[in-house]
Amino acid sequence: MEKDYFILKRTDGEASYMSWGREITSLEAVPAQAGDGWRIFIQWASGRTQYINGFESLEDAENWIATKAQDWLSAVNAQL
Image 1 (tube, rainbow, N blue to C red):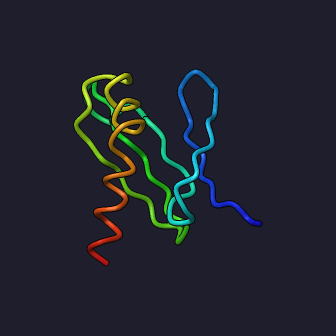
Image 2: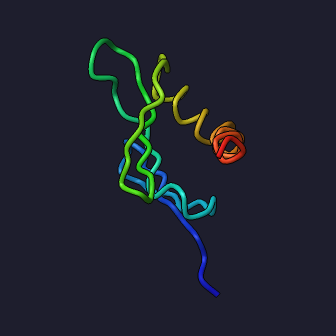
């Protein structure tokens, strides 16, 4: 049975694998291009990239991934 995974990368070099379907191939907290904040980088299986901005710290961004990303992905899928 084939499993659907994407990689959650962390800045400490570790990678965690989470089973959230085939839609997203990578979800990663990255520094914002301007300022001191952080954002979430999303790589969709289609090749499209997306960012979610507005996180004050790496911890905030990684907490969002751990606690809210699943609900966010469900809401995105519901809009399709």
